[in-house]
Length: 463
Ligand code: AMP
Image (cartoon, rainbow, N blue to C red; front, side):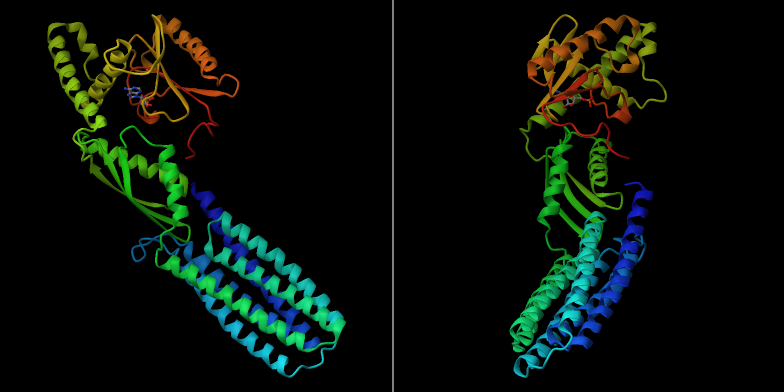
């Protein structure tokens, strides 16, 4: 996530926290005024809960500000967990208020007192409840949008306040209609029990957050992202663990790769996992990838790599022999600024598609003529994922010459034919050609990907 978006999110949280504090103070004043007018213990219980709102809103402000601080040497995982403290603190305050409310309710249940100015009191309470409703919904929305548990907990707490106010308004109306004063005390007692349950719920959520309890929702969304972006070399991912601290997500996992990968290839795969997860969960995400070699000696993917390596060595020795014999081959030698391993990789991968075209390696060929061959991708990224390949070995788009123009144009005609055949011509499809490292080209034999059969999302990953 770009830094400016991150800052905007933090600013929005702090502004919303400040609004919550101001509004909670105003609503508290309104409720105490109602209590002074009516003397109702149910109204008092409602007002007591509002004191907690003010204290909680102040704590939320503090925690939102603290959690926005970047990781430092003494807090390498950031300060996000302060938000769980805030939620826990709020839960504890709610439990205290519940006890106070229950006490006041019991007193007026046992010794009912007359309740003056009921009409004005009810009107004031309706105004306070409406203000709280708007504030609570806003806090929940901003909390979700900016991934702030403290703001969300505050919003939920304020909504419980709306329910209590509604209960109190109804009870005052019943008292006014029936003249039965004990109802006021009974309603206050019931509210005490309800508020107690809300407090216990908040404390248990905070406890789970602080203890890094497993978060099935987060694990499911990580698995879905990795599945969607799965790369050819990823044999398995296991021991996935993830926890949230505020909006910091920490993820660690084991990635099983083919045994024959070089250290730098394994590093590239681990880096790809990290990039994909940061793209999804924000740049502040911490990702730790432990790479494991595939333990299965009969694994087809590992054997394919072994085969590739052998072909690679042969190909490079053949090239050296030829280079000695023929001066014109010098131009095909690795350029000085291109690492030899990369050149070798290009040679190695090119042979795979040529071998498919020549029928030496099995593939699900869906079209072939004298210029172009098309076959299904071995690791499909969409229900329809076909590779359209010129029979002539052209490594990348950069190597296309004028004499290839007819073949390249023909690749589009084949794409149109296949789109109709696969039933995606109307629903839509995407044609894509990767070129070199920044585009993650893996096989250095020019090919056009054809994706279809599902909505394909935005064209590029966001930066
Ligand atoms: P690119 O990253 O554009 O070079 O794409 C190379 C594509 O070739 C990847 O999507 C691979 O899954 C696919 N691929 C590699 N080997 C084979 C194979 N033997 N059969 C079919 N597709 C393959």
